[in-house]
Length: 260
Image (tube, rainbow, N blue to C red; front, side):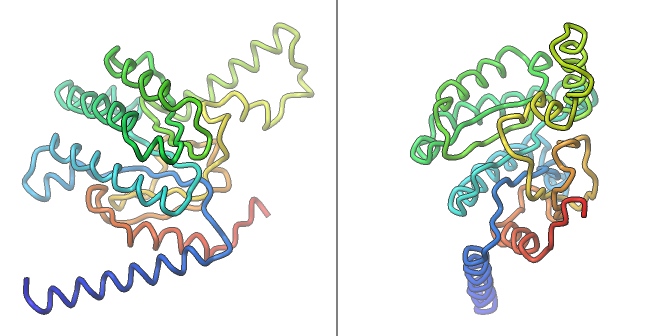
């Protein structure tokens, strides 16, 4: 490594340390961070790698980001891992690779000492009936081993689609009304929120999407009514702690209006 590269590394570390200090000292905190992890395949293609390797690098990045989240004491962390549309549109070979990554990842995280030391509850939300039994077994394993934890909550959206989630909530409300358990006048936002997959966690404060795409992609549509967004051009495997700190600092500098 040349002198200029070493100087660049030192400067980069100094900038990151400054960002970290400013984020930690700010009065406004991120309580719930959600990330749309996008760009694994495009990262791989840009490096002449296989899509499978791109997804594996994405899994490793998530493990790294989990460390940053815990260090920053962000109590709720949610990631968009696989949409219902992905299951329909991706080819079988790619899906099989993804499913194996989820199995490995869920079992790894359930056995990870960091998870137990920090008391992280792991929960998976989505249409589990669309997933293979092997993935569901891994989900059960991770959720069972962490079910009693309450300090942090890590939510993975698998086979998830927000429109389907909202429809399910509406069907539940309609069923209760038809049975005389719920009057029309009592149907409100709380009734809907309480029937969503995310009923046990607060709405996201900040959503980060990687890869340069600037869209929601059927992710937490109801829950993101007053969420702040941060879009970055970097592909998910290249996402850095510096970039995450920049996103949080941007959030801290905004004035949230909550519909005002």
